[in-house]
Amino acid sequence: MSRRVLQVRDKNRRVVVQDRDLEIARLVLTHRAVVRENVQLAFGLSLHRANKRLRALFDAGWLRREADPLSGKVVYTLGGAALPPLADSTGESLTALKKRADRPGYLNHALGLCSASLRLQKALEGKSCVTLEKMLVERDAVDEFLFQLGTATEERCLIRPDALLALQVRVRRFHLVLEYDTGSVASKPFQEKAESFKVWQDSGAMEQVHGKGELLILVLTGSERRINNLQKVVQAAGMQDRYLFASRQEFLQAPLDQLLDTPLWLRGSQRQVSLASLLSLERIDS
Image (cartoon, rainbow, N blue to C red; front, side, top):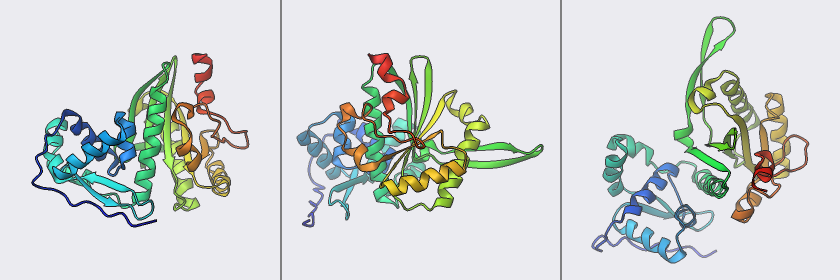
C-alpha cells in the first residue's frame, strides 16, 4: 500500500460554513474520529459532496486530519474552530468540549465502533416498525450507579458500554449494547464487564436511566476462536442469555439493506440468528 500524502490546509481559502457542517462537527465530536465513509453514511452524501465538505471544513479549521497507519484512510478529528459554534449549540463549556474532542487513544477501536454503530443505527431507522429513541456512544453511554450489596452495604459501579441504542418495536422495548472487540481485552476484564452489565440490569439502575427494556449485548469480534473463548467468559458471569456474538468483518461488509435480516449472531450454542428475528421485525413487517 502506497503511503497517502495529505494535502496541506489552505488557511487563506474562503469557506462558507453551511448548516449541515455543524451536524458533521457533532458527529465527529460524538465519535472523536471518523473517515469519509462515515460522513457519507450519516448524511447520505455522495463521494464528491462528502470530499468537498470535509476539505472545506479542514481548510476552515473545523477538522484536523491524519492518515490511519493501518488502513491508509484519511481520519478526521475535531479542530479548534468548531468548538465555539458547538459550545453555542450545546450549552457546554469550551473546556468540556476540548476534553471531549481529544483524539482517541485507541484509534482502531474508535473508527471500528463508529462504522459499526452508524450501520446499526441506519439499518434500524430503515424499519417502519422501529422507533430508535436514542443512540449513545462511549462517554455519553457511561453510567455510574449505586447498588445494594448484601443487607446494608452500598457499592458504586461504573458501566461503560461502547454504544447503547434504545428502541421501541411495537409494544416491546429493547436496550441494545454494542461492544466492538478488537481482541485486546483479556478474559478477566471482559468477565468483570459482563458481571457489571448483570448488576446494572438486575439492580434496576439501567431502567432508572433508560426506562424499561430487554437488554441484549451485541459483541463484534475477530474470529471464531475468540467468540468461543468469550462465550465461556459470559457463561461464567451468568450472562450467556444476554450476549450475542458476530464477526466484525461480516457485520461491516453485509449490505446495509440486509444487515438486520442476515443471520450473523450466535447466542450460546444456538444456530446463528438475525437481529430481525431476535427483535421480531420479520413478523411485524411481513
